[in-house]
Image (cartoon, rainbow, N blue to C red; front, side, top):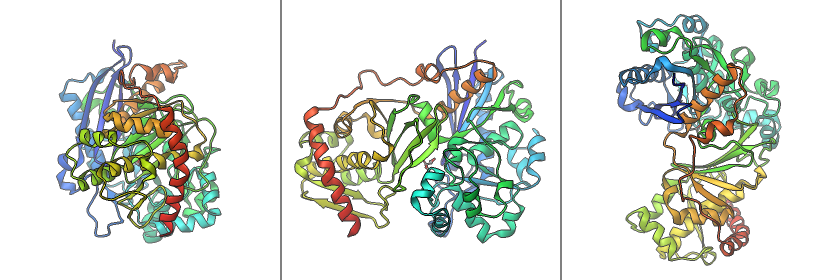
Length: 525
Ligand code: XUL
């Protein structure tokens, strides 16, 4: 009988599923439910509820529950053999939080298949909406917690990151300060990942070390709740948090709700979920220490596995627990593809192929011309005021500006990832812009490292399916190897390897110092 595993990914705009056949080494189904399109009654835009305050970004936990029903209904309708699924795992957009009251545990244990999940849950929310990762309304709370923990360096070395507006701890503090009665009524706080895992398991699920590290509440080295961070955040918090554990660990069998309603295997294991980034690390096949991925998307991310916990003293980067190893590091650059698009539009370049050709008309290092593309306020480095800065670069020279933006993005990644102290042997490039060889050559030269392209459309959901498979094998008494598990599903695109050009790499080694100086100057402007 085929061994099927289901991985789910509750992201900002959609809920996705990937079903894998482990012995057949193949993905048997991929499916997505778009929140705005499937559930217009919630009035979300790109998965976010409308709000007068532009800094406030919330979504609805009932919407996520509705999407879970809709996704299972679709899988059943498509004839996916849900009766053969041996385990389910998942991941969620990081940092978002769900606030449950004292009725939650009993309701979860008795989910009624005659009702929808959202109807079952209607009386268990202590807060109607959930702040998500796009929220940046907690600057004050960040400052308060950071101060109590002794500043940026100590906050980062204890919790894995400096305080960030989107992180769960500052969000909880704001809730406690602004709605103290509702905070008091909250008996259990979940992350997006652990909330959805709770529905699958029919009981309040633990939080894993990966997503837990995105809260400013977990001791990154001891992997337990940090008493000082809890104290700095809100009173009585320890009683409201579930336990912390490894992602993929078995919680129990799936709730009978999914068995009766959708024909899910009654023996299928419900397992602990993680954050979308830790899951992507698996989905892209990064299992060995020092492996690094660069994702070129709406925002660009640089992330990799890490054996020894190394935190960022400057507080720009994050360390999370990694499902397959000890740790993962992540840096998020807000001015990614949107900034590249702005430059392309500015110079009237018709498509990305033409953009790539512009790069070929110029030389590595751009004769020292530098562009700092902060079209939006930037996360790394922290720049609150948007601004585009040129140094030794003629604004009228289209080709030089095209090269300059991508060189700047790569130099910035190199500069701001130094704290990780990893010398990657190979970079896995993914995301929209990664199918442009001219861009990947710049990446290889700036990083002085071989680059391969990975093409997985749903890397987070795939990572979650692999997590389910791993969890099931462990529960079955096996000792599965991550490398073997990921090998058949995450292979680099054939012929995509790019080797750095030695001469160009030397030019970038030198340029890095000038680039750092330009960044410093621009930030002081
Ligand atoms: C990571 C972060 C985002 C979300 C997106 O810190 O905030 O990548 O996880 O879903």
